[in-house]
Image (cartoon, rainbow, N blue to C red; front, side):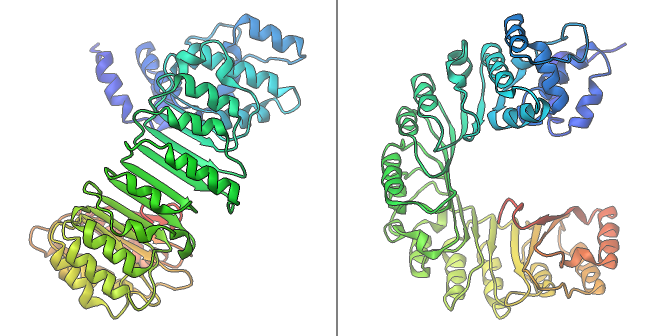
Length: 471
């Protein structure tokens, strides 16, 4: 029988990484398929379940099992045979939080901390090169002190951590982990000095994300300033969520390609008055979620940096200056491929100007309902004014605004879409805030199914506001 070579199977199975059910079925085909698929199934510890941890316990070395036995921990192995593979060695993404939760659930009536430390010891000794590590102040066990941890963690490229975590863990990481490309920090009620040490030794940090859980006191703000000072100027992506120390520190990152600011309050934009004059010649993606800076500051920023932008996403805008901001986008952001901004129900003319001036638009996200365009107005505008390269349309629905789109209006839109010059199949997404969008109508869904079968609709999905990747 013909057998695909391992390299081909590897490449094929990579596409199944998110499809765990199919990957599990591949285990049963033959030993080769099993060997290839098991490496992918065990790559990410976030995919591990209770049965997985039972298997890991069975993989523990004799010394670890003796430690568990002396602690009075009963081990029920799934089989008397030794494991077929060294499962722990396949792990590339390790979540300390997930291990903590699963071990505690599986051994809730026993000393799960002892089991937890032996599972960490197993991973540190068996993983040759971990790529991503996540730990968020759940475990007091210092896994960086176990034999093999240096070799396991020295090539780490992604770290997701809490600022409250043990100084000793960060201190150890700073000694041998110098090549992080991505760092995500959740700021709690304290910032470990070891975290600043870790940041100061990074040579190639590209992606930084900071999220605040609480309002910051003066000491934390001061420490954050020290943290910002120690950041390397290699950043190309910066994400700040909820709050930040003054934003003026961003000015040093002149090679930024992506900037995401997600704040709940306008006063969180302290320091943007300095940023408005800074040129970021490589900035391609600007996403400002929820609140936005003062309009005159944002407009000046776009006048300087808008021509480089390929994607812009702005939150729920309000105020008299909103229309002028959209006109500035149409004037200075002419190379956009993706746009997500609000257009009031009296701004159809402005939307037409945006479509005319931004000739390369491929995807557009439009707020619908209330003070914004109705669904019909949004669809009609996309049909009448957009160019042939548009292939994706997303409608955001506001809370407490019921869909008023009639089935015949929806069908008319799709019929006319097929009559466009060189029509493209359309990907349609509904961002649903309160189960009130057009998809709640059975007649509308029948129309969507009809045009999906005809190939007019390439994909259709409904997502929640918080889950939407572009909100």
